Amino acid sequence: VQAVAIVPGAAPAVLAEARLDARQLDAAYRSGLSGTHYTIDLPLSNALPAGADKATVKVSLLDAATGATVSFEQPVALSPK
Image 1 (cartoon, rainbow, N blue to C red):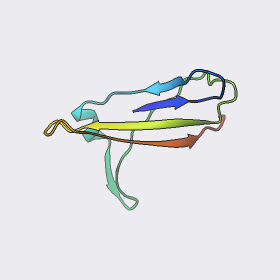
Image 2 (spheres, rainbow, N blue to C red):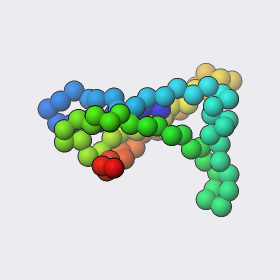
Image 3 (cartoon, rainbow, N blue to C red):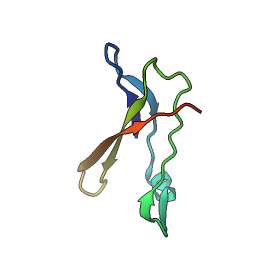
Image 4 (cartoon, rainbow, N blue to C red):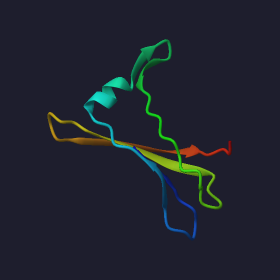
């Protein structure tokens, strides 16, 4: 999982990054009233680049059985605390 801020005129800034092993991914599994999903907390660095109001979050999953990698990315709005 990686969160990157992209601000015009500046290099992309990695805000946070995490690698989960099989045990950690299993612990992130949730199933309930809101459906089945994985919840992964990814704390962002405190120093956001000036002008950053969103981050692009990319999740990649490597299937150990087949060696195939599946990825998904989506912009997420950032709001100050």
